[in-house]
Every structure is written in C-alpha cells, then in structure tokens.
View 1: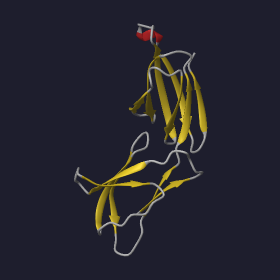
View 2: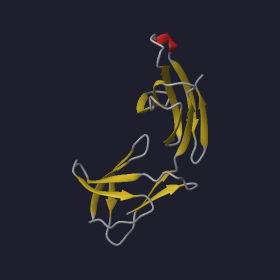
View 3: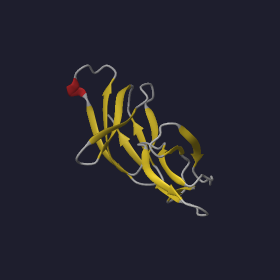
View 4: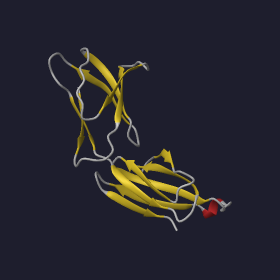
Length: 151
C-alpha cells in the first residue's frame, strides 16, 4: 500500500494508523510517501490529519499496490491579538464537529487542516461572558494559507 498526498507538496506529512478490519489493535504506523507490504485482506486506516480521515474496508490484493491519496492540507494562520481560549470545528452545513483546541498562550498560530469549511470560536482570557465569544467562519483549500484575524 502506498500513501500519497494529492496536490502541491506540503511541509506537513501525516502518518496513518493501520488496523485489521474491525480490530482496534494497531498493526502498523505508515508515513505518507512510503510503500509498505501487507498480507491480503481488508484494513481500516486512520490518517492523522486534522480532522482525522478514516478509510474503512481498504482491500489489499495479491501482487498489487493500492494507492491511497488524500488532499494536501492547507494552513490556517490565526492572529489572535491576545491570549485566550478557542477551538476549531468542521462546519459542513448540517453538523458541526470539534477538530482541535487553540494554544491558549500563543497570539499567532498555524494549524494544518484538510480542505473544507470551518468555524473558529474564541474568547479572550479576561472575557467572562459568553456574549464576548468571537466566531469566524473560514474555508481551507489544499496548499493555501488562509489568514484568520481575531480582534
């Protein structure tokens, strides 16, 4: 099985957890850009991007190479203007799903995200009321830096 990134090269190369289909035990950790051999059968893959990409029932056949491709991540460059608490969520229009928390002590931060629509929720350290929460919606494209300013 060969793991590849689609699109322009990135500084971020994710790893993948390989498991036998339906099992939770980790069989292998495979890096992108590398090819590893597996016994014929079905496998579940968890690609450690943000958000995680899960591929179930990937079939390995005799004497063939499966090429697994995922889009290259884009960069969210977040300028906060102060310290505080925040999180990023995937927003697909129907469901909002948590992706990661922001670093509370950084004023500027870069997070590598898979292409898609996102929402950032942030509140400055000294702001105690929920009405002071700042929301920013943004879209990430492969190999592109998206600037998000919170002021």
